[in-house]
Amino acid sequence: MKQLLLIRHAKSSWDFPGASDHDRPLNERGGSDAPKMGAALAQRGVSPDAIVTSTANRAKTTAGIIAEGLGFSSSSIREERDLYLASPQAILRVVQQIDESCETALLFGHNPGMHDAVEMICGAPVDHFPTLAVARIELDIDYWGEVDSGTGLLLELLTPRALKTD
Image (cartoon, rainbow, N blue to C red):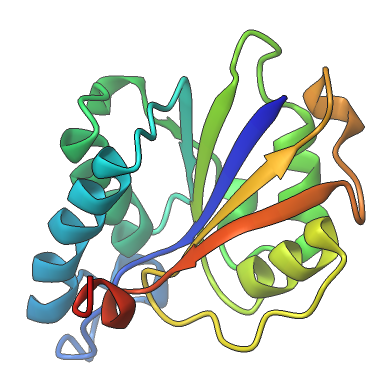
């Protein structure tokens, strides 16, 4: 049994008109919501063996903040260019290449690919996948290469708004 968390980056800033999309930072809300999400995941017992992130600044920053909240070394986060604005198929390929020793993996990326990947892997529609949404997916598999359409069970969909009611 493996667990996959697909996570959309936290809220980013549009206050830097000269910055490329790839380089946009988190805004104030994103910077304050990410530690709360890390704490919520820690409360749920999430203990990642691997964290993989898009190379975009907003995704890398989100991954680093959540990794810190989970006691995961930020120097062990793997950056994957293929996750930047990735299609669900590209996300699936990254998932299928996760080291087999990992039981729990976190992937950080962007919409619409992350939303679509959650729906594809779980074989069920997901209404809304806002910034910093976290899909906790259980996979009844032995090898990451077995992940495919419909192989996952969505255990929980966490959003920053839902955390405010916890």
